[in-house]
Image 1 (cartoon, helix red, strand yellow):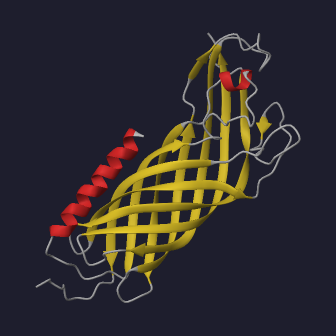
Image 2: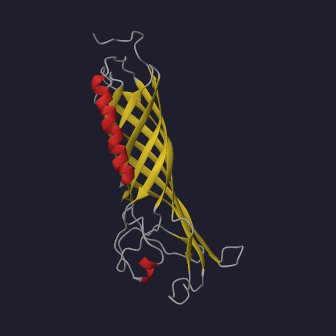
Length: 260
């Protein structure tokens, strides 16, 4: 929540600066962002291990609470004012529980093993296609909103290393899965020159709107198992991402327009 409030303050400052700036820029035909940032998950991705297992929480969380993201997107503006663009985005997201020290899991009949360190990781490679609206493409600070329909390729791994052991005593790999979802984003693109700028923003991502499935786990593999069954509710894969990066502008008219 603190990170979100900080982002709102930064955006408000940029809007204020934008309102008093006199210079305007020629609008680009193409815009490329290269970004990276922080990801925080929402239920049912996040959870508390092993408490949620012991309490029988339904659906069982994936126990990946936060992580990082990086990627790039390219936009082509279809109108002369460069307010409406179509976009293609590629994003790689790494989520993890981190190393969690636990004890006496055998007494709770969860894994049948004792004390040690538990960890689960999840990786998402996202391909997004969508549209964006820019509110002030000629201004130094240009706020925007966009929506994308996404294809998500998902994988992961879970390990449990017994205390004093050098080799994980429990290790299982997630079977690769494909899910379809959507993202909703907003941010500000700040021009530093005709061709270069910076961008900050945030987005809400829902990775598994469509394509949910349920598979049988083995001793060494497991699936997403996000589809509702007779014993478990369906699992939603939603998260928030905050990002910053560089902007690159192409295809502007040669003449730079100045406001009188």
